[in-house]
Length: 95
Image 1: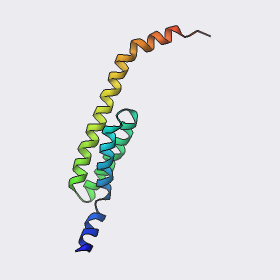
Image 2 (image 1 turned 180 degrees about the vertical axis):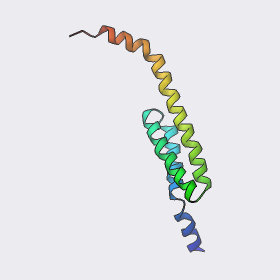
Image 3 (image 1 turned 30 degrees about the horizontal axis):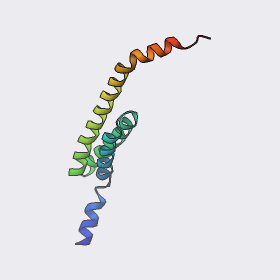
Image 4 (image 1 turned 90 degrees about the vertical axis):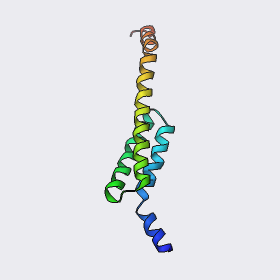
C-alpha cells in the first residue's frame, strides 16, 4: 500500500510545483507574477504530457489566470500613470 502511494506521488511532482506556482502567480500579480506564471505553466505542461494529473490541469488554469491578471494590471497601471509620468518627465531639468 505504501509503495503504491509513493509511486503515485513520485509522478506528480511537476504538477504540484506548477499548482503552487499558479497560486503564487495570482498572489504576486505584476512582473513577478508573469514570470512565475510562465514557469508554472511549463511545469504543468510537462506534467500533463508525461502523466496527466488533476493538479497539473488545475495548475495550468491557475497559471493562465495569474498571467492574464498580471498583464491586465500592468496595462492598467501604465494607462493610469501615463499622465503623471509625462508630467514628471517634463519637470526634469534638461542637461
